Figure 1 (spheres, rainbow, N blue to C red):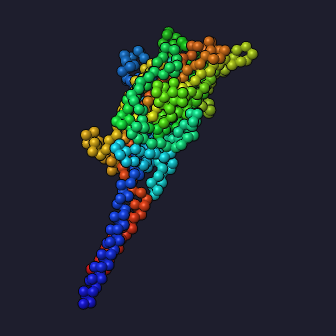
Figure 2: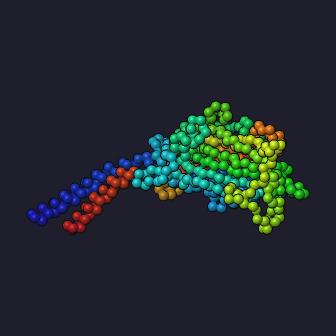
Figure 3: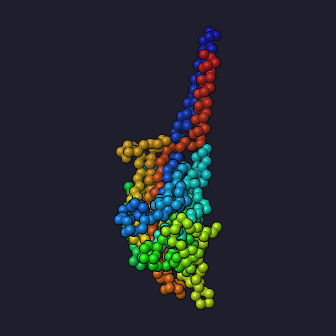
Length: 455
């Protein structure tokens, strides 16, 4: 009887422990279906067209057009070699988002914050502050110099009510019906200079999936632009530093809000009122050629260019009119930004030294579609999202100063491109789930220990 009682006690004890462990596991299991998801992917932004890069079809045959040697990634310092030609800059993103119910399920992002693993919160792009790239001169015969400064964060803040600063609520939501409501194509009126043109085309994806999860990109570009003609001795394309008079200015480029939820306040600047159009004032100052007159295309290896600690190349002297008044004119740095969409977007322009034609397409794939799209569920991925948005920019004199006529030959510029947000999503257990699973596992460990003691 004693042996029977002992066995019964062991069995009862084992059964009780097993019930406790099972209870914890049963309580924990439904939490695995909660909406918190872990995302990882990339954010890619840039302007220009790869066909204008060295070896591209638009610069052949050789001599038809000078190749675009610039790094046009946004931000430029995100590329490993900021001095190599590029039309995109790619940054990793990782963090936690909240998926809703339905198909397609919405995805809600909080603002960029440090990741908290135990709380399953935070994430985004590693913020960039103090980005500074001093480009080599004569990247194109119109440009004397270029220095790019800025910062970037995603998910960022929405624009305020006046659309003058990114100080609104942080983050945003992607959802069915949240993107551009209908196909649209437009050439913005008054956006580009005379004789220049550009267009944005947007075709929404399934269920108009998309919305506003803005990128806060801020900063400025210090430009030196040669006074025409843009040719040197013998009519060859200008490839010099310090040969021609030029205009120089520090042009604000933000707050730029790629993927914004903001819409045109007046509903007249952009058809249908979708997207937002912003303008930032700047001033061109006429300067003397500068400190050197050496043709660097010929003597590049023997030239040391004057350099200053404050944003790059040494400037020429400001030219003045009677009474010492600086010869200058004002202008606007303009931008057009749209929501994210899983559809197709196109930016085109013929508004500067190069022609641009950039296209990007998004998607929303669940696990059942991975095989048909030749992709896999890396790291437990259950959903793959790609969101795209076009953007356009223009640098245009407004002709309002007394010297506007004198500086009328200074070229305007237009450019733009696409932004692409690619995300893999997978379930992320909530902290309570992890704790309950821990208790359940502890119970099972205790059951095993009892068996070993009594076996």
